[in-house]
Image (tube, rainbow, N blue to C red; front, side, top):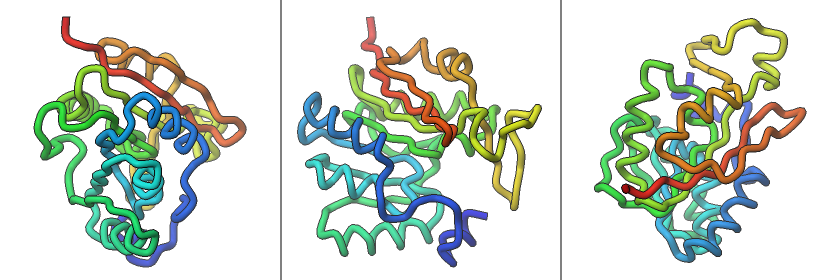
Length: 201
């Protein structure tokens, strides 16, 4: 599904304009970690990576699909910003421990199957330095594809999608992260979270 989507450009998400919640959180993080190293998970065509670079972050964007990275590189060149793009699996990120001051995930986790959550979380904690920040946006049960459904997941056109309750998100991350903010964007049906990785005791 994603390979075709990036090949023909026909899909249901934004391409050029970054999400306002992401812009708000990145602006906040610019004050907390000026010039910091930012990793964009599942970066797609690069809109959030480019926004981060425009705010002064040193940005790396990763995606599993080469077609997405080709589009992202072209977009970054057109905007005149410097971003490093790499192909990678979010469950096994190819970076040293503590390589990033902040990690952004806009719409990547909700395509990961539940069995892969432990690997995703371990990979995230490996590359994010203690005290670093994690920005997350995922589907809530109010998202249009789940509204009225009794199931929290489905497969459509070969793509796995899942929505999360507030309790699930808190349970998944509370051991490794301090949740600074968790808000649901209505009626769109997205959770937006800002978290800080706990330091080792």
